Image (tube, rainbow, N blue to C red):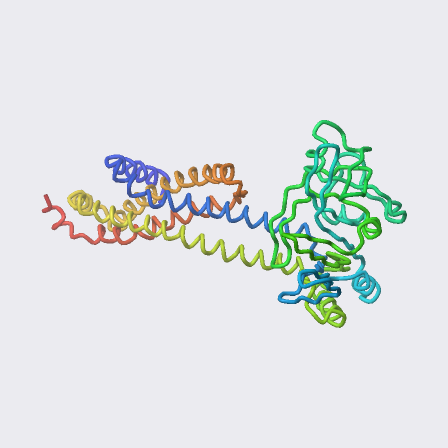
Length: 429
């Protein structure tokens, strides 16, 4: 179609549509909400998925995490004082750590840690914090940084120094008005530690997988692993309502670094086989972040498909609305169609005119829907805290789908208008 004819047809279509503004607006509401829903849902789904993948990727795609886990429905007391007093022994050990680093050829590094909760006090300020015995490479492993002072060093580990590094929130609560570096805090009832550093704030992570719980590094206190073993031993004591119990845990977690992503799953299987030989009871859990990442990506695809299907229903309803209004328009304009045919218009011209009208209508609805869809995700993100990521292709795709739906659902009314008998159409009042 030549440009001047197309321009004339579009101008005529706009004139016809503006004669019934409210009816046209109500007709394209389905497309407006459908397009905006597609963009908003994909943006929120993409943001949530990327956040989950970021947290999993932070664990390391070439890492395998082995955690101590209390056996379910198992007592296994190694020491019994009375019916209500036990010392439970379970979890991974220093011997496991040595075997992992010395016998598996694909392992290029391993980082042990031990964690438990104790009171930490500074003058009149006291909090319940997570004490974490670690080695110096723990900072890099968890992608943290030091805000002031320094982190633990190899010398601290070798000499079992009484030094500690505070998490951001722990430092703020214990030292609300001063710099903690160089000051002393009391951990537990009798051990004093010199503060050598404070970590930067790090957003808490959600629970990942079946064995990794949510973590908030800002509330931690880090001490050398050798100091932890020398000062606090391996027994964690608990006393509730007069009952005393204790747990003997050598290590809470071992993070194993594999030489390549291709060897991660094979190394995890070898770890499982090795630990089974020395742990008759399942008192450990193995988590492979690479597998979690693959599952998160698969879940994202399914989530997008479901959300896209829901939004597609709105677009389908919008298309049915367009077909309905165009059929009514054909009935209203029967005489006009007869006159156009009588003065030489071909059936193809009638089809083109009605298809241009539906295209203009669906394009207008698509543009309004795109504007609404781009405005909604930032609002939802600010109110709910859920991240929203709008991909450049999503508004383009949603708009094109709206236009295609308008054209597809406009074909039948256009053909019906073109097939009218000119003589019969002229007789219509």
